[in-house]
Every structure is written in C-alpha cells, then in structure tokens.
Length: 167
Image (tube, rainbow, N blue to C red; front, side, top):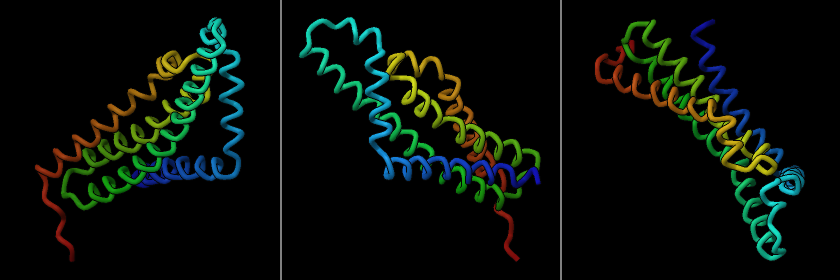
C-alpha cells in the first residue's frame, strides 16, 4: 500500500487542478465577486483618495488575484502530470526500494502542496494584499523545493541505476 500512496497523491493533485477549472467554467463570477469583495476590505487600497487611481488599482489587483486562481489550476495539473511521469519512471529503475520510496514521497508531497500557495494567495490576497498572503502561506511555496529535491534525486537515480530489464 505504501508504494501506491505517491500515485494517489499525484492523482489528487490532478483532480484538484481539474476540479477548480470545472468550477471556473460553471461559475467564474463567484471567484471574481469574492476577489472584488475582498478588495473592498483591503486597508491599503481604501487609503487611496484619488478615485481614478483607486479604480485603476482595484482593476489591476482584481486581475492579478484572478491570475493566482489560474496559477493554482496550471500548477496543480502540470505538476500532477510531472509527478505521475516521474513516479512511473522511478518504478522502472533498479535503484534500492528505500531510495525509490523517499524520492517518490518527496516528488509527490512537494508537488501536491506547492500549488496551494497560489490558491491561498488568491483566496486571501484581495483583503490581505497579494504579497502578505504569499508570505503568510510561504510554507506551501517552500514545498516547491521539496518537489525539486525529489526531481534531483530522480536524476541521481537515473544516472546511477540502470532501467530494469523487461521480460
């Protein structure tokens, strides 16, 4: 069972990315309305006195926050596919099982958690400010490093160990 968990995590990553895109298609206005409601509560934006400048900042921030939702979708689906490919590749290597397991878990867990930095920045960014939201959820961003570590371990194994002979 423990060898299947990274594959399950990869599939969950793909499901998250595809699921949010389905929600976008069904009700994109829901997300955009939440962004606009959050921006109305943003203290920094509310301090802008010039109505033209304030309208420009609101539009710019709304567009950028919407882009963060899209980034969650793009990263989750793209990284999910990469995870699956790396896991399948690792399974064909003649490397020690423990090394393959460690690599599989770093790739899958890091890849699964990383896109959430964009989702949480999208959800909380309008009210908190985009940079503050990214900082508040930076732990998810650091998971990209865990994913990268798994990719480097995969490269190491690919260079050190042969592919299994197919029978």
